[in-house]
Length: 246
Ligand code: ZN
Image (cartoon, rainbow, N blue to C red; front, side, top):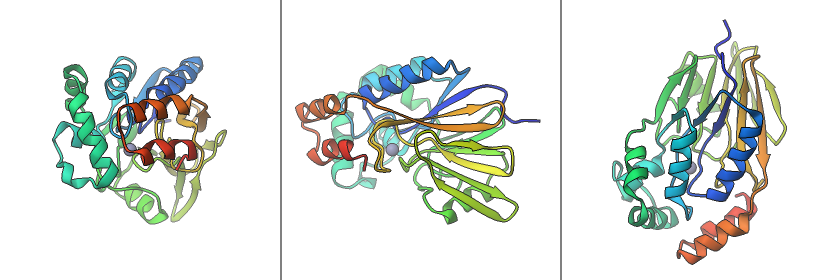
């Protein structure tokens, strides 16, 4: 039996970038999916954490907690972050309101739904491990049994398939469609609010009950987010990188 009965849009790593999130939610709404899932990191880095939490709380059917969410909540130590990530997390702690805080506090870093396993980071370490190599992808596929495994955290869209002993795939560009029928798959939708694959557009993924995954990118007004970051005194490097998608 196919593991997926619903049409699902998947987003991840929003990082307080409201304009990117709004562009993605508009594109997703046009696709009319049955469900929206979010793989975590709603806050950190970006200028509008409260608005992003509220929008995801209102729209997502499932949401995970990412490492930035947990650091901002104080569930993980801020000393786990260095430099700009710590600076932005401290600022986010000072502005996060009760409603968004309560929403984040109720989230877990892994889940299982509709026959799919979901992690913010990886199956070995749902909070911190980055799946960017074939080796880390292999470990997560070994530690799971679902036909499709979803991860976020790296901000790089990926589709890596395991068919028998053979691992294949990698980075996915806008418009990539992957046939999930053969083997098992590890998928990362990429990042809404801080892409790191050289494409600055906001990312999302669509899963179809017919077992395909399609990767999408949408333009958003990057300069509006950058202006808000500078107004709030967030680190300049975090604003500048949005235009590069790195
Ligand atoms: Zn992130």
